[in-house]
Image 1 (cartoon, rainbow, N blue to C red):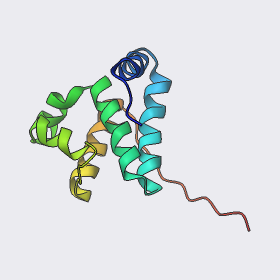
Image 2: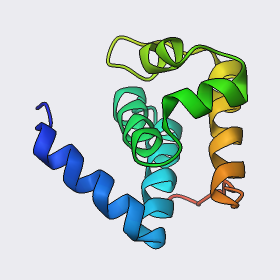
Image 3: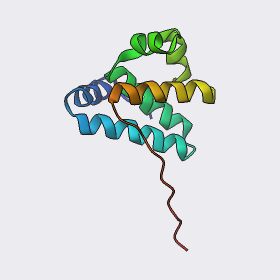
Image 4: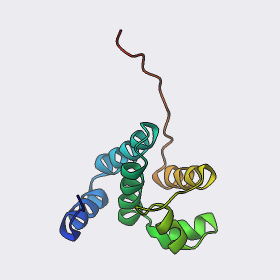
Length: 108
C-alpha cells in the first residue's frame, strides 16, 4: 500500500520535532534491513533522509548525486552493501548516535 503525501508529511513533521521518534525511525529501518525486509527498510530510510538532512546534503557527504541515492532507496533500488553501509554511517554521524546489533537467542 502506497503512503499518501499527507501521511509522509505528517511523519516528516514528527521526525523534525521529536528526537526519540527520529531515532526510532532510523532504528526500525535498520531492523527491517537486518530482518531481510529490504523494501520496508529502504522506504523507512528514505523517509528518514527526507525528514532530516535531505538527499542533497547526503549526496554531498557521500560524493554521490542526490538522484542516485534516491534511486537506491526507491522501490526498485538495489544498493550495494558498500553504498548501504555508507548511507547508514552518514546517518549515524548526522544523528550523533551509533547503532549496535545485539544477538537474540530464539525461544526453544
